[in-house]
Image (tube, rainbow, N blue to C red):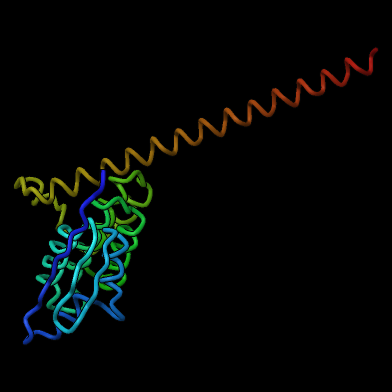
Length: 205
């Protein structure tokens, strides 16, 4: 079955050159990442970006969301949007690199660490998630303060639960690795004993 190629266009207001530049990124890096994530072709001419490909509709939505969050060249919200697009498109490695980029852009912002930590937890990297969530909590200790938890603040409870879940997953993963290592050592030991016995049996003949 042949898939229809879509052809759409995004047009930015002419009076907002700065936000358009933030949208596109240095040397149009952000556009290239959207192309790679959604398998589309983006062609920029002035304030217009032509979108071609099967994922054109999703790419248009991504550009609109990105543009709305691109008032600041250091906007991490725009990077969160890009990472979400990459994740939905089935590119988890690209999505994580984008979230790491957000951390580099704003390393003192607890939200960048929190979002990366939650991504790592969701994608099976509990040890990394613990590190990221610890950084977020360190930068904003009030985020899971006793008062916030006692008051039932939703975000505080979610951060607390995510951190506990990451710790438990890390312990389970570590235990599984240690068990596998012990079993491998035991198997090698049994093989070595068997080899020695076979060698003695051959010598006795």
